[in-house]
Length: 185
Image (cartoon, rainbow, N blue to C red; front, side, top):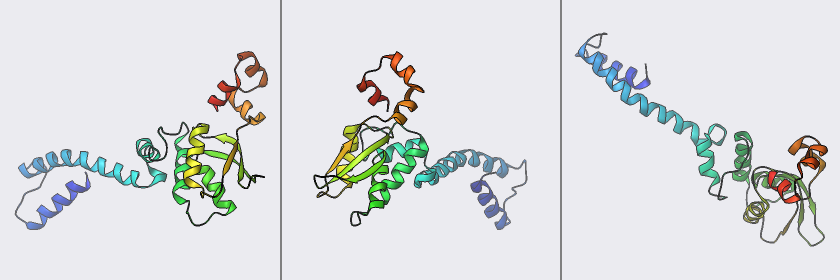
């Protein structure tokens, strides 16, 4: 029984006028309403889940991501939730080292931040979460303060190579170009 069915039955029973016992005309009418309201109830439950990032469906996450990038991140739902949560929690007035690390996650980057000799920050990208270099820069520009230039170091690490194909021998025999390897990451 749905909440709507229970509520309608309780209301009708409270009047003392209607016979809502099983098999009665009103009982059949309530069951028909229950079918219709069941669809609404399922949609309402889905809406309630989609309100919060941590319980949102894949479609809801994608509709939020489309605000920042042309396509959804090619990553797991959990990682995409983490990225959105970090992105929404970034405040424009406080740029501490911890917040800069959160901004990186929000832009789909796992990496380290170091001061750059050119007065900005150098981001050593260790892992990308479904975003390419162009998207990373665009998102970082929108999240970082305008006076703080960011430079990306997208060099491949051994860890990245091992995640792609398992062993160096497999990568070497597959005859990948560096561009292909970077696109896989």
